[in-house]
Image (tube, rainbow, N blue to C red):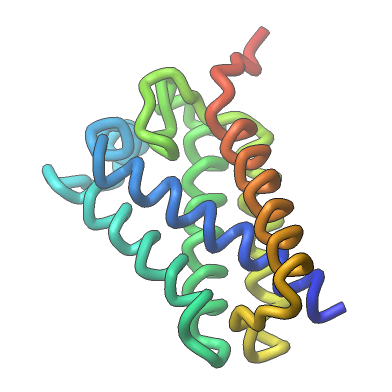
Amino acid sequence: MMESLAATVWVFAALLVVTGVLKIVRPTEVERALRSVDVPAAHGSGRVLGAAEVVVGVAVFLIDGPLPAVALTLLYLGFGVFVVVALRSGGVVRSCGCVGKADTPPNPLHVILNVLGVVSGGAAVSVGSVIWESGPVLESAVAIAMIGIAIWLAYSIVALPISWKA
């Protein structure tokens, strides 16, 4: 049980690193998305958010204890609230800013992904630690490959330019 929880948290942590780097490289879309729902976003705030995501994602892998899982949970909770507000207000049309692309409007799949991040992080908080513990080389390689596939699938869900208003 602990291994599956840890792997789930690692996927969400690694996804934070990927999307954080994308926000650092292309912060404009997230800043525009925040402003579209009346959240003040100064120039550079997209990079700050992206850096926070990277720090939290890396911390999950390197720091023992519940604090990284708490931070992960809070980030996904914030993202979920933002996407729900964006969907309800109709403010964000072109992009939610999640992946730094102009054609990634918020959609219900974003909400589901964020809820799963909150649940996963919350469960990890109760466990207290999900620090990476490598086992035999083949087992670790398989785990890393599966985590990579899960990250790609999660990224694909977020990056799909789907219009849900049809």
